[in-house]
Length: 197
Image (cartoon, rainbow, N blue to C red; front, side, top):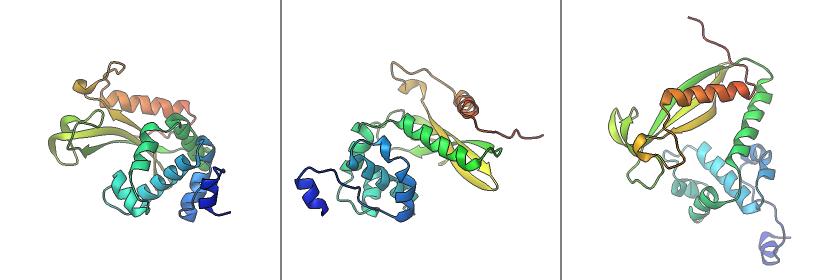
């Protein structure tokens, strides 16, 4: 039965295919999404992020994955019923399985992105190493794993400057965020190789 008929009859339908490797990777997360449209947006975002485009904004990703509007991607991120924590946990467990107990080196880094407006949470005037000066932007503290000269992302946490804190937030330095990340990785069962001086 074609997709249009399935939509008209309100029948469950399969997600539109993207690229074989992306579809295969995303299939292990399919059960985390109640609606097929949300799962499709997850696949489109994976495809867009792994594409060679310079700006990884939602409008640019929508163009490269050939969907009409970035609005569905925005709705997926902002309003859809899915759990980032469940997704993160599943992804970290996949990485642990692939490592098969191998010890990894963990690299902690920070990433800065300039932002023009102030609509994004935790954007502030702060030092951005990527531009070498104080500018309006957002900063994340990131952990990467290294095994057999392969580097892969593990966890990131957003740095929340004091002037941007919400009522439920607690100010944490970048060092404190890095410490939390390492603790989380150890408690998750990652075998971390300690550096030698």
